[in-house]
Image (cartoon, rainbow, N blue to C red; front, top):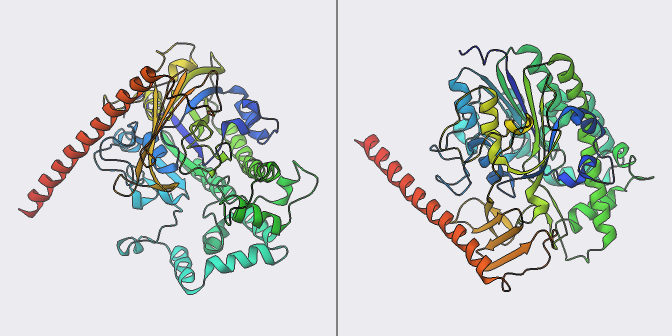
Length: 486
């Protein structure tokens, strides 16, 4: 192993559905995450970071492969021709560890590739060939789910039995290990106390060099924060019926309720309270890191995408590609080093995460990576401004899909001044001047035909490249199949 790698470590913390503009450091009126705010005082904050996918599968594909989602065979599951960051790290003798509970990031979708330890809280029904790898607690939970109508039982317990919500939070907080047994009754498999406990246990036992990735789902809908976190922002908690109405009727637009400003504000408050809940455990983790990692550790904190709060008549993060979803927070800390720049306004993208981590480990960045290292920005150097950022996914009827056979292309191309959106399903094009219209309300595509043509050329070139690479991948797969048959 190269001596430059021996003492270096990287910790990547990703938070599902965290909007940048719901953090005080980005100008929000509530201090939703005081522990995070304190920790990032020694960090470099990126104010214009954008995801390359508005939902988890396309976003994380870009994060871990540094290749745009539509290219090289698609993004879900990760195709074999897309080499992941962790595969490259493992080749250089770096121990790789992961813990998550997002069903789109599990073994089923090939996210375990390159990880030495992969704690997978994903909720997809295991295939028969995966059953053998389950431990006793996971098998017990799986059989219990089949025996009981867990969804209906959970709803009754959550909304009709007084005090159950508080008991559930208290148990999972005080005894994180109970998560494995309570798995069938919880909407989140691995919650913040469980993941924090596992991370600290790993850090206590592991020597450098290592790469640790932890993904937190606590902020993700349905919003159901503990009362104490709600009370940090208002005088009284929501009743269980109010919570059910907001999360089961308003948020998912059941029965077409007339959405009022108060409903939106109440949902935002529940969301902010979820951030506040997660922040308690991030604070515990940050204290541990600050005490045990005085130097030679790179900490990266970001989100896969944001969340809609009816800015464009939609909630959640599916079927949309506006900046409420695309702009994400990003903080980078080199422990033991003071950054030359604490605030960076250069436009960057999540494609840059993997190259940055490789650069920190002094590992050569592959030529096929489309992102670039942003470590020079921390050290006061400059990088060439990006011409544009592409973000993309497949969707149908406002729902996430995994490929062009199941759904339609939804794409945005963003430059410093302009934002272009193409919705294949609706045969719709949108163009916004972000300087004059940062909230993307006024479509001016018909007023600027030359600018529209410019973006169409970028779009069509990208689609043609994706199609050509797909055909190439199919030919390679067919050749391999023939060889195996022979």
